[in-house]
Length: 439
Ligand code: UDX
Image 1: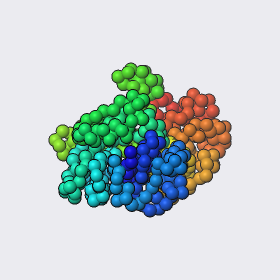
Image 2: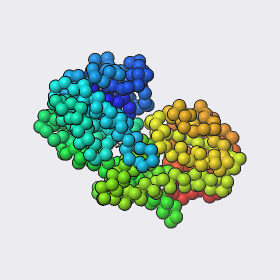
Image 3: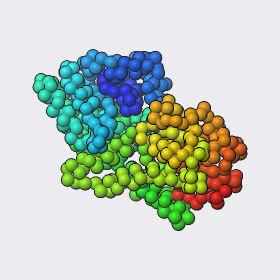
Image 4: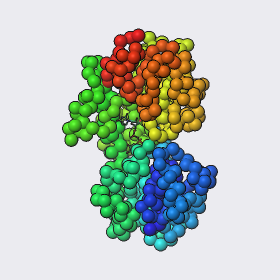
C-alpha cells in the first residue's frame, strides 16, 4: 500500500510515521519547504517523544519520505490523508476549513486511478460531504471515495496512542473504501483493535463528541476541586472514589488550571457553534466553555491571594509554560493568560519550561527566561507551577526554599503533597486540597 499524508504537523507527521512503521509506503507532503528540508535532515518540526527515532528508522527502511510536491505524492497513492490544520476561525469560533478545502482541490487535480481521500484532521460534521463535492466539481471523471478517519492522539503520547488505540473510527460508505482502510489498519486489526465503521457524518461527530466529553469531564473535576477547597475535602480522593466506578473511569479526573492545547478549546467551540447553527444547542458544553475560560483568570487571582493580595513589585517564579508536559506546544496554554494577568498586577516574571521556551519566547513578552528550574527560583517572592513536568516533581525542597526569598508555593498541578510541603515550612496552595497555614 502507498499513501500520501498532506500536512506534517502533530497529526500528519505522527500518523505518517506510524503508518510507515506498519509497513505502508508513506509520502508526507508539506507546503513549508523549510519543514521538509528539516525532515530530510531528521530535524522534527514538533517535539514528540520518540518521533525522531521512528522517522529515522522508517526513512532508512525506505518506507517514509518527504516532499513539497503534492501532485507527485498523490499520483498512484491508494489513499491520500488530509491532515492539515483546522484552527478556530477568528471571531466566530467555527473551524477554519480553508486549508482542508484547498488540499481537497489540489488532490482532485492530481488523482489518477481509484483513490480514497481521507480526512484525518478534526473537521466539523459535513466536511467530508463538502470535500466530496469539491473533488467531483474539480474532476467529474475522478474515481474516488471520501473517508473520515479522525485521530485520538494526545500530544506527548501520540505514537503510543496511534500504535495502541482504544479504537479506530472509520466513516466509509463503499466496499472499496472500507477494504482499503482495513488493509491500511491491518496491523491493528490483527491485534483485535476495535474498528468502528460508520457514516461520514457519524465519524466526524464521534471525534467532536469524544473531545467535548473529555473537556466536560475535566471541567467537572475542576469544579469539584473548588468545592473540596470550600469544605476541606481532598479532590484526589474524590477522583479515586468516583473513578473506580467503571461507569465513570479514573482517567481525565486530574484537577488543574483548566484545559488548554490545540484541540479541546477549539473543538468545544466548534461543536457548540455547529450545534447552535443546527438548532440543537449543547448547553452543557456551552457552560463547560465559559467555566474553563473563567477558570484561567481565577488562577492568577489564586496566585495573587497566596502572595497576600498583591504581587505589585514582586518577582514570581513560574515553572512550566506549555499546555501540558512532554510537548513544546504553547497553543492555548494556561500560561498565556496567567502570566500576563500577573504582570498586569505588577509582578515581574522569571520562567522556565523544559521544551516550550522557543515557542514561549514568541508568545510571552517582558519575562526573564531562565535556563533551569533552580535558577528560576533565585530571589523570587513566590513560586507558581503551571505545567506538571516530571523534573519539577523531583526538585530538592531544601534547595527550593533556600532559593526563594519567601516560602510561598502555588501548585496548580498538585505535583507535591500538602503534608510534605507544610513540614518543609512552605505556605503551600494547591488545587482541591487544604492549603497549609499562611507563612
Ligand atoms: C486531546 C485528546 O486527549 C486527544 O484524544 C485528541 O486527539 C486531541 O486532544 P491533547 O490536547 O494533546 O489531546 O492533550 P490532553 O492530554 O487531552 O490534555 C488536554 C488538556 O486537558 C491539557 O491542558 C491538560 O492539562 C488538561 N487535562 C487533561 C486536565 O486538566 N486534566 C486531565 O485529567 C487531563
